[in-house]
Length: 130
Image (cartoon, rainbow, N blue to C red; front, side, top):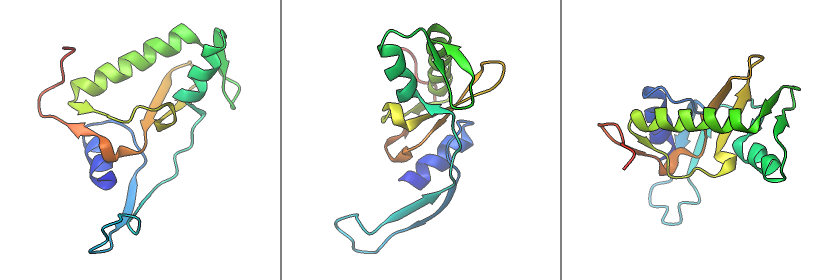
C-alpha cells in the first residue's frame, strides 16, 4: 500500500519520498515481514514541529537552516497545499504532524512532502469542501 500510495501521489504532482522497492513475504499473516524502501527526504522541519512551537504562543518559527516564518504565513501556505491536494483528488488519511515534511526556501515559501502513504485514498474527481 505504501508503494502504491507514493506512486499515485507522485503521479498527481504531490511530493513524497520516491519509492525504491518493496518486499512481501507470501503468506505472512502478521504483515511484519513486509518491507517498503524509499529515498531519504531532507527537510527543514515537520509540520508537527512548527505547530508545537506555535502552540506555545510563538508567532515565528526558525528552521535548522536559520530561515524564520510567521505562524499566519505558515498556516495559509499549508491550507493552500491541502486545498491543492484535494483538487487533485487526494485524501491523505494520516495527517499527523510528523507525516508532513517541510522545506523553506529563502523567499519563505514552504515546500511540503508527505510520508507514510499507505492510508491515502485517491479519487478521479476533485474532492469538494463538503
